[in-house]
Image (cartoon, rainbow, N blue to C red; front, side, top):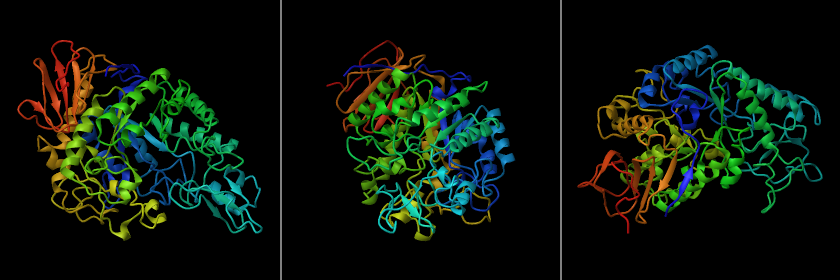
Length: 554
């Protein structure tokens, strides 16, 4: 097993290419830190914790939507793109946060949701007041129904959240929503939609935002004939060719600034080559690598995922991104603790038993593996604390429309959105001030050992591992090496080199792997056993001399 894969040139400079190897920390504001005591995280709370984020070693913050929203889908139903939700703060506070973070060397990336708006957005409210066929309705996907009385949806498209993707209004028309009914899809064939989004980009770029993460980036263009999903045919609303014209226009907007802004796509596509088309030099700068996130804890699957990502990104000179979790998926400690460690609907639905000890070991190993790979790294808040998925949320606290629209069949995403524990022995663990209102999602009562304060005092904690790993990553022990070179190894070992003197080794198997003379351990995800690397452990090695050898080779 030997291969050399060229990736985009990496740089630790603070210039225009900063994003190519950046560490980006995802802030889910409502669950990060509550400064005003109402039980909901806010921008003031983020500002208080900026020093923590700097000490962690991140280069940028990605904020989930912070705009005014009725909260039908945790802020992804946006009613005003030029303001801040009152629960989170004000526009002035957002500008202050952007400036204060930048003064600490931390840039800001914010969400944009171009596929849909809130049903409370002025455009959609105007559309409901207007008649069928009116210009106001042309900004959306209003259509007459099928059947003699129009009582059937225009087609059989299904919502990603479950059920029909169509809802009927009082005058008989139906409108499209690929997500919740409160999230009507925009019609990207309409010039107003193009112009509005370009102005929104400029609005936030002018306020110091360094980039946008684009939600559901592959869904914007729809088949005007409303064709059905058919195997072997182009998909009627996912990854259609015309979508690339949108991002070429956005790239022109981003590149017009003295320090070019960054466009990051949320692109869920199984085909790596189709994904790479979004990353051509005149489109998006980067996109999330969901194949890596979705992999089970399996040596061959992870090797194939890394190989595929690097190979697909190289021709378009785009950096890969390495992601272990986000606000939509089961947390790694829980996911890796299951027998079926893949991110799958079936595994969540069946309530697969979880071994958190095993899951924590694997999550630590996966974190160091991801940190060692060339490209950018995304860390979801709480990942650095090893927080598990919270699965026993009371019915009355459930917020996620995926839970409600599936009648509880899908456990939803609330379990990875529980507020962060900062200090103390009991909830709210410093998330809110003493005497504050209850947290919007309840924290478990056994999280005292997982708080930031508790882990800061423990050398072997998950937080200590992340701090040390990210510090070493910034130092670049691989030198200028922007390629990886797979090293011969046993079937239970994944090993690669970067540069002349750096190697990363992951042992998936039960047999410990002895290190070779001249290999110094820079960091290990778990303690070594008699100088050997135990199962479910990643080590970074400095090799005194250039070598293509690691132990554990059969």
